Image (cartoon, rainbow, N blue to C red):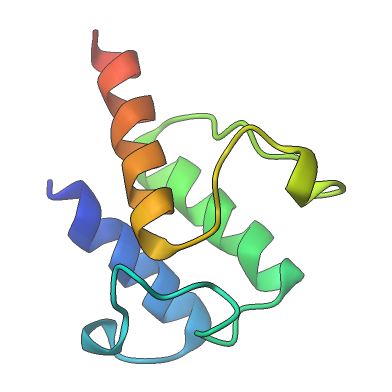
Length: 86
């Protein structure tokens, strides 16, 4: 499974846009994803990869998980998946 493409697919689905419209530089705000959409995206990512994302929905800016861009999210998920399989 290609982590990058799966994460982009989940984010695109949440934003109700085509995956080809999601760039690695995009922010969730650029894509029209609000806080509820962010939480739903995190849940979908956790389920897809069977991981636990260190993200506090009540205080997203206080979380250790970087959600500043699609690239940051993909990088964080790749790290979590690698840690899980190590």
